[in-house]
Length: 251
Image 1 (cartoon, rainbow, N blue to C red):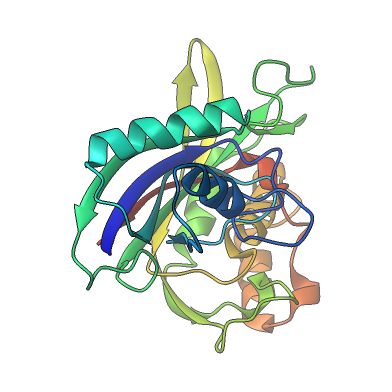
Image 2 (image 1 turned 45 degrees about the vertical axis):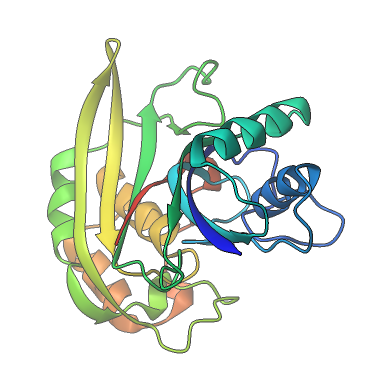
């Protein structure tokens, strides 16, 4: 047996998240099916983050222990061929053989996410399912100032899904930045964040609250009050999944 590490990109729209579930499509199942087509049996592909239904990835990391002696390039090419044939929206960007002490989830020291918002009245077409279409203009400066109030180690209960299985609501938020990026003449608001780990729905919950600040419905004080309430009911409506991307994982 040898362990292989994969860098993976996927459009999360067709999937019920990363994690394999009965009778519904998942990214993990797509990868394991591709490996089974290559003669690998009883395969478990373990990812760095269990992205939710509809969430995308530009640099998800996963590993698997395989019985056959693959060269990384041949394995990547073969997996991509089967993923393409199955019409999965998943691609292997890189593959490498790695030591048994590496674990995609537990060896990770930082995860980087972005959330994309496009402000315009017209519905999205090209970017449909790739960003949150917000009809009102947002004050990015106010959003970024509010975001900085959330940095550091805190109890993030307000921004935690009621289904979250984490043992503690205490997390350390290393970065949380709100900026505007120009994409072919179109402005896209990006909320960028890094942390070792996150609570279930934490980034989308934070995004929903920052949007409320950007609209002028919330002040920075309102955000702090919601934060300090440590009460899920104090959270603004959660941002939709399709604007969220797992960008990269550091080890």
